[in-house]
Image (cartoon, rainbow, N blue to C red; front, side, top):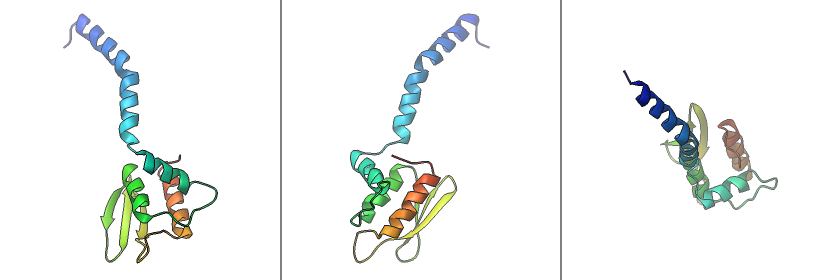
Length: 115
């Protein structure tokens, strides 16, 4: 059991640090670098670019907290909190087709990620 003063100190400590802890959690959750933020904006832009490289999209999905599972061949599965996205890495080119970008956008919306 905590004494009266210890409870008061604990309460003061938790009240003073709550905004800081909220900020730290927000920084840790959105651990995207500037390149990944630009990729997120490009995916959600009205005009879909046809030159988005797959490795940058994969990096973005990792940054938002998706787990990556390799499958046979070029197949890959992204999973975040039970929300799953199946894709195939483009080959031999590295750019992603526009329909895949639309699918990535829909997946990001499902998991609650927007620019």
